[in-house]
Length: 239
Image (tube, rainbow, N blue to C red; front, side, top):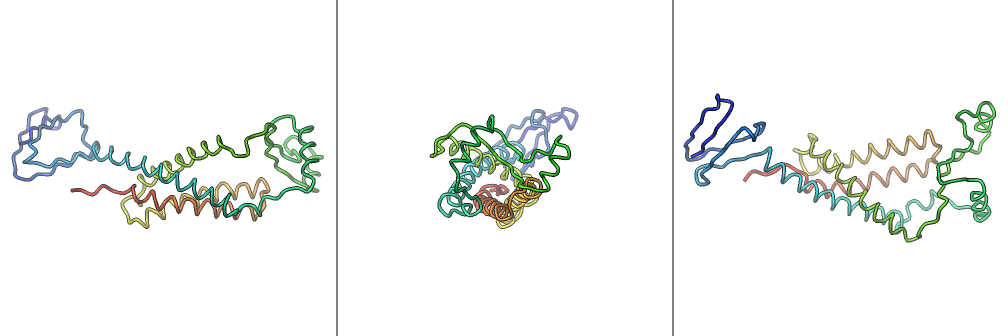
């Protein structure tokens, strides 16, 4: 038998008896409901509690594995396939430029050349004539193996995958097919890639070839992560 003390019926006790009953407690405030169940008589599904815990575990697992996929793909695209090498060029007089930067860039920062804001007519003229540059300058050296960047980068990848998994769990695609869930994650990659890199192309004068490769890289990476995330982030199957 099931004994329910519910505030929805004036706080009175309710006794139910049947050979097979399934109770769906979605939307019920659990702190106001007391259930005493006979395991042989009833199956009770508490979706707001038990299924939520299971779903969160799957989102965490999807985040970690999705982060691994992102990390591996970006390592391949940058270090093995060298997809970005042709879009970022070096200088023949690199040593002379480095010395110039040491002497003229006072600290690590982002430098805009020419500096337009508050520069008046002179800055406008320089901007029209060119050249135009955005320099991301780090005065301090770093380990070429980049161990700290690798570790932080992996944690960021897990975080990105967690955001994608959580968005998927809150979307209409969540209840659809595996392909629909993969497509949803891929669309997140399309949105973020276009938003970030087209903005840089338009306002910060990033070159077109660099922009295209970065967009393609981001979209592919999220589609690959989506193949893994969609396996775990899906509706629970009742048993």
